[in-house]
Amino acid sequence: MGELEKLLEKKKFLESEKEAIKKYMGPHEHDENLDKKWEEINKELEEIEKKIEELKKA
Image (tube, rainbow, N blue to C red; front, top):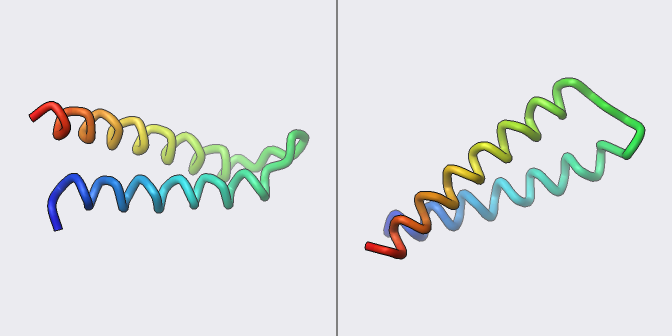
């Protein structure tokens, strides 16, 4: 499996994890641990997007 495929697989996993968190976090519910995990996922997704773009350009 190439690096691009691994990144796309990881991205898909993180997006599904993010959706699961979204189901538990309602608009008026704020769990500090979920908020922290949400931020970590967003940061990792951002990094993966950058790597994917770099690989596509190469």
